[in-house]
Image 1: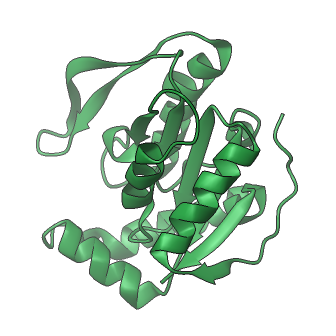
Image 2: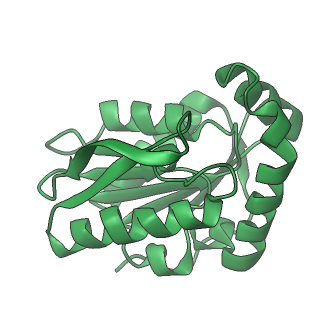
Length: 194
């Protein structure tokens, strides 16, 4: 079971240093499940892909993004709960998890079933991913943040401006998640990425 103790103080690092630190954490903990939480635009998705490419043990991990599980712009909390129930809990039990991706254009879960193979390592990333009920399922966990102006710029460029009108509402949900769950304190590693 992972340690519940962590430092709540974020260390400021470059993106490359963050990748090295997370790969080292995964290796040190012989992790099979990594959970990455953090503010929007902090670089969670990019970091998850890089860590997956440099995974220190046999078998490349599957990466599940909460962007596939949020039921719309008001669904940060629900996305985290779905990740726990449909992906992390089954993987922890050695069973296949499965979910359908949320179709943001149609506003519904649709498409083929995505199956999560329990024999492969797993990385789950997204705002709201780390909560008290998830910490016990994660072998390693990370909290990511960064300067708000930088995060906002990255998020808006990434999404082609579609996120701009939802930025404040989403930030309010992030604030509520942070106040409720304290993911920065649950995580074994807390980084501010510049």
